Each structure stands twice: as structure tokens, then as C-alpha cells.
Length: 322
Image 1 (cartoon, rainbow, N blue to C red):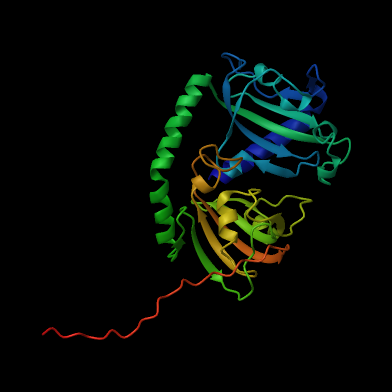
Image 2 (cartoon, rainbow, N blue to C red):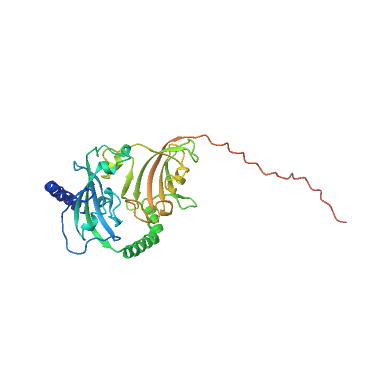
């Protein structure tokens, strides 16, 4: 039902945007926008924390991302505008339940780092944001709500992970840090060492099964989150150097090259109480990983372990008492 409602919303917004192109307004910085609704009530103020549902699309109406499909909206604290791309001069124009289309120039978004510009945002194009204001809170109210939500999730985190393991009939090993893992394909090749570059395929999910990222094209497409223009290939990084979450650094050092595994990573080894993007705060994460390859660096030789000296046991002459 939720996906059905979302589809209707996109169709309606697409129809509105076609008719709205000639009615676009501009901010002082030159960003085009049009407000679809004009609800009564107080406008958003500086320092307010706003909860938004956001859909990102290309000029050709291709879907890039959506909080509706992610399963939860985003929160932003309103601050004075610092740049054309921050939208902070648009939020004060909106009230609760307002919807707006913002056409952000991709040239401004990727200025200074053109190498990261994807092909579906060519020069002169726009990133189209369709935004709906779902909640407006004072900073103190938002902090109190967030702390209560995190406390509730944290209290249930271990139980939820245990239920996931039981429901999926997994036989896991647990490290002292709390990382749980199952090796699903074995290999006799060596394990990587700290500093070696690893090549990894992965699919990351929440405990409810929601996929939040994958570099495997078939997996991404099956979950409706294929990103046009993305290069689907193994991710490469030096393992054990803090460039990824702790659960990955620890878990990948346990695998032999060529092995596949399931990592169940508690939030303390993941994104903690902050969360990240589609990952809510205090979330246990499930990763299907494959250690595709290892590029090894030269490591210092490991000193041989010295065996402890053992005293020789000499036969003891028994004495008899007179």
C-alpha cells in the first residue's frame, strides 16, 4: 500500500511540475522553485528542526533517491544560508505540510569536483528536489524526541539482532567486540593483513530487510534502488586503517581471500547513535560480503614465537628412612 501511495504521489507531482515550469520563482541566489501548496500556520524559522520527505529526480524524470522508499524521512536544522546549494533560503517560505519543487543547478553542486559528476547530471542540467514538510520542531523538542527514540532503539537492539539471527536460522560466531559473523563460502587463500587493499562486493540491509546500499547491480535493481550511471564494481580500500566502519575493518580481517560471509554489525561498530543517510540511529546492520581480492603490501617479517624453556626432569632417587 505504501509503495502504491508513493507511485500516485510521483505521478501527481510529475503532472504538476510539467505545468509549473513557466511559473518558477527564483531565490536571491538564483535557485528556481515553486511551492505547490500554501498551508496556513507559522513559517519555518531559523534554528527549527524540520522533518522532510525528499524525492530526487533528473531533468528527464528519472528517480535518483527517495525517502519514501528508504522508509523514513530526513531531519535538518535550519541555519542561515551559506551557499546556493543549501536551500536554507527556501525553507523559511514553507509551513507545515507544504510541498515545493526545487531545481538545483548541477553545475553549482559539482563545482570544484567535476570528476564526481555522474553522467545523468550533464552540464546545464538540474537536480530536482520534490520536498514535503512533515514536521516542524524547536531544537529542544527535536533533541528530546531524538534522545527518547535512540534510547528505545538501543534498549531493543540486542533483542532485535537475536530475533533476526533466530528467524534466519543463522549459526553465528561472536567476537569480543560484539561483531557476529557467518562464513557462507570458504577459501584456503591467505587472509589480508592491516594495510592490504581489499576488493569487496557487498549488500547492506537493516534488520527489517530494507536494502540501503549495494555495489552489486542485480541486487540494487531487485530492490528498486538502481542508480543510473553508477559503476557497479568491487569497492577498494586498505583494510584495518579506519576508512570504513569498525565492523568492516574487523570482519574482513577474519576472512580468507575469496570467502563470503554475513556480518551482523551492532551500532557500536557501525554508525552509532548518529546513523547515516538511510541508516537510522542505533541500528544493527546486516552485510552480505564477498572478499573478491586482496592486493598485498610488504609487511615487516613476524618474529618467531620463542618457545618457553622447560626444565629437564631427572629421576629422583628415593630415600628410605631408618
